[in-house]
Image (cartoon, rainbow, N blue to C red):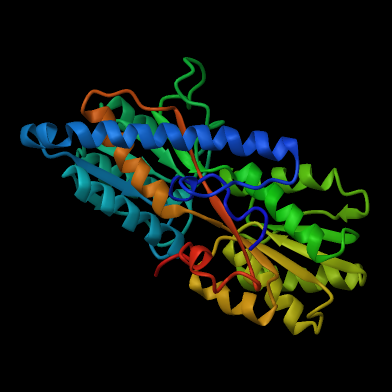
Length: 355
């Protein structure tokens, strides 16, 4: 097992020791652990009052994912459904087939028209979804963002146009980017050229993963980070970009794919170009579609989020607010590093996303 596969998650906090390589990492883990403890305390409070509140009203909570067909959001939905069952709420799951603000905005409008008691949403753009979400807040519907955020993600500050959501619940994507940087540095022997395969600017999560990766690389003097390649969430484009970067840099050593299709595309480019074993790939997210690539060595490691926890605490937080309790403005969930050495271990494999 790697030294960072028990990053702060509520499920792993009890009975396990969190190991870190340096003081800064320990401080970051401690910060997220405190948030997880806050989330745990919140859930305990909710459970204690659930029976009485349920007798008075059955709430409807809507979950709008980034897209409906992705294993990450499917797993998030299952966590949300478990929480809704626990507190006696109804969950509405409605989204667009693509991660696109133009497609998500009308879905949001349709959900607002149904007048749910609260909305959980993974905004597909941190600026373009501000005004559409403001419609929900103006209609008196509490908004909580999950996985992604609007504005800066700092809510309830009393300033700015995007501080109205009650809470942001997600993995710490900056720390996830740093973990990916450490994994790639290890895979390439701490030297060589690497680049980031990203989706597009303006997506809060992948922006932060790139930020964290670059921050980590400042501590690796032997590694040169080349220009980021944006693939519009198209694996074929990511594969073509990998081959183009390699053609310009035949000494390329590694690629960090900030999401599933970026990593899968980069791995495909490596395979098609006959670079297997020479160019290492580290990705983010862990659906079943990437597990074979890990076992075959096409992808060296992935940073898996815990989407079920995000969905669970999203519903718990919404329910707590609706029943008159205060909630944290942010809740951090964990992530787990997976590679060929640990992917078959039950304590790691349980974080593979569900279809």
